[in-house]
Length: 403
Ligand code: SF4
Image 1 (tube, helix red, strand yellow):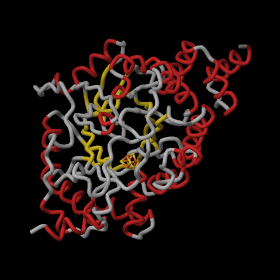
Image 2 (cartoon, rainbow, N blue to C red; image 1 turned 30 degrees about the horizontal axis):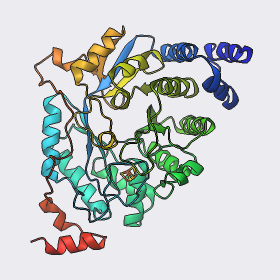
Image 3 (cartoon, rainbow, N blue to C red; image 1 turned 90 degrees about the vertical axis):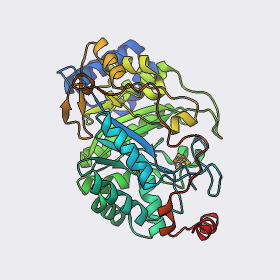
Image 4 (cartoon, rainbow, N blue to C red; image 1 turned 180 degrees about the vertical axis):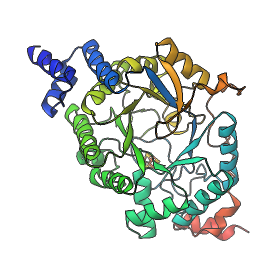
């Protein structure tokens, strides 16, 4: 306990926490103390008591994936009758609906589909920017960029250049899971991106002037030390580039996955969020993951280091496939922020304040449940897909049959 008191004093004084001290705190500090330390670290960076959120839509353009991570309930095999690719027109409609509720960007991520070449992404991004010039594309996590690099046989910087030229604005931090290769091998996600490869995509993106986020999915097979190693690797890259805008952590959602197992508790979530705020002293923003933890734990996150409620989301497919998905529209998010004693402000991906709650400025439809990528049973194939060469045998066969 004496050691914990010394470490707590040093954290309060703003000293960077060492790996050993972080592990001691994470394992043994009482939860209220961990919360108070994280809250003080949050208050040093955000003394104005403003809590932000973004109105954007979380769209998964395809669920077809060759990576087959064993913690994922979302993907479908190549050739599966449940596999889908969204058409450009479907995506435009989603953007129209997003703009109608005050949204400013798409968070666009998907499976590693061998039948979508780099040109499909370029054409999609250009088409979106032509119709919606100021709308932002927070698109393609590092493993998707690596997948496109392998598919196109271009190096990662070359893929990023082409995506940026087509309209990519920033890179979401998905696919990080735990940035320790022992864990990645056990989760069958080492092949999609090693820890170094994930970090290297972010390094290249930051050097090209893109801002990105960073994530951590905990609660599968990793140890406490490995969670901390993940945070320390992010801290080191942030020291080097300063390109991360925010960090988001959530617990593994086990339902319908090959890995199965149990979900971490709410207390473990709050402790993990708090230690992240303490360790990541060079990250300005930490988001609350209310979509996995629910509104109330999301609200409590604001006392455990979070200064941002993340996205209104509008749509969610991945967490829902694994058995959990909470819905809060803008009014509900703002109520949670204000009831906790903070001021709610809308932001963009760069954390620039766009204004107060939009529903107080004009009438917006209430959103009482999250949309899905497609209505159940909709197996339509977008007409433009025939213009893009498929790589897989089922994909080639399907395209040969298209008129
Ligand atoms: S987590 Fe992503 S990369 Fe892994 S199987 Fe699911 S969709 Fe594919």
